[in-house]
Amino acid sequence: MATRIQQRNTAAILEAALDVFSTHGFRGATVDQIARAAGLSKPNLLYYFPSKEAIHTALLDGLLEAWLDPLRALDETGEPLDEILAYVRRKLEMSRDFPRESRLFANEIIQGAPRIGPYLSGELKDLVDEKSRVIRRWATDGKIAPVDPYHLFFSIWALTQHYADFDVQVHAVLGGNQIDPYPDALAHLETLFTRMLTR
Amino acid sequence: MATRIQQRNTAAILEAALDVFSTHGFRGATVDQIARAAGLSKPNLLYYFPSKEAIHTALLDGLLEAWLDPLRALDETGEPLDEILAYVRRKLEMSRDFPRESRLFANEIIQGAPRIGPYLSGELKDLVDEKSRVIRRWATDGKIAPVDPYHLFFSIWALTQHYADFDVQVHAVLGGNQIDPYPDALAHLETLFTRMLTR
DNA sequence: GTTGGTTTTGACCTGTTGGTCAAAACAGGC
DNA sequence: GCCTGTTTTGACCAACAGGTCAAAACCAAC
Image 1 (cartoon, protein in one colour):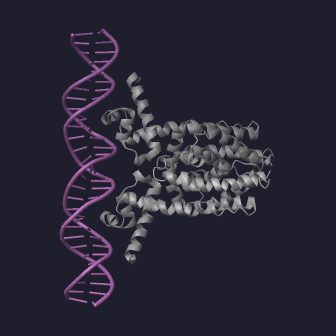
Image 2: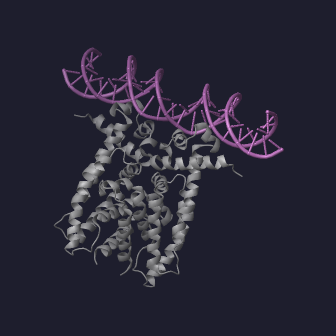
Image 3: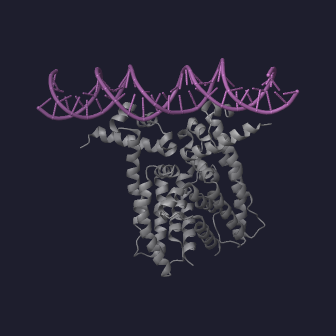
């Protein structure tokens, strides 16, 4: 039973913390900075979350929950190539719509996954193992070209998340004209995976 | 004219700083931590480099220099597919042999490239523009399948650097058995780009 | 408008941070 | 072994870090 104020403030804090943590990493972020971005004083922020760590944890918990959804949606009974392309599309949309979440995750991994190690070798690995069996079956049934399922997933993650995590580089290389790179990126990735998976 | 001691200590500092900066980012790294890792006292470290910033800059300067080499080596007069596959191979080897450098770079980009923005839209963009024209020519000449050159480069970077930057995740998903993922990764990427670039 | 809980704040504490400085320790050439 | 420049150190500083606390301000129900 949270009051109106509580809802507003915790939301503002998480929003601000996402900004700060995703661009500076955990150790590089400061509570003051988050508080200022949320429009609160530091003690006031610490009234809602007991510590810097707690904010970070809350953020990660919410993220990891949603992170697996697109992969879960990969349907064994669907048309193989369509299913994989749909997964690519969903992941790319997430990069476009939630780039800060992607960077938060990237920061955590690059820094050695000190807080989400168990998640990676637990939930994530289990799901990837399961879906890898599906991919392998599709390949042995000749429905897609032979491919290492694990490295296929790594490829999808790398290619789609790149547009969020390395956004600055993408824009710098493509030049000043403010073109949205996502339409071209989607076309490119659809071509890439179609050619890769049809012999 | 650097003395023996200077050479040894500056090398030790840069080595230690690479470790620390690449795993914690600039703001998350502390001078004390770097000094300890280098086996020096903090004031002693600051005798060799005037500031934390200076160490970071020295590291980045050295890195950016080497970063472009593999792409520069892409030879317009070579066999198109071979040239691109060779580039992929070189980049993947860099991920394997210099993962910390890759993570240092990734950290910098994720954090908005505050220190290397000019490099991205300068040297890097210029080189990519140039090589993109080569790719485009190959495509219009029918020597490789049609492809967006810029997104092709993004794909190569994303796929190869992923194995360095997301190393922890790769190992977690592949499971505890300490298998070196690089041989499989190389085979996978060669297949991927061969299929992508041959009609 | 008083009451009881919620929210906010300023002052404060302790440890850490990047960085300075003068003095001490240490080279190596003579 | 002495001298000159190099290297190292302990003590120190101001700013900032995460976090605490008691008191004040606010709010809503009565």
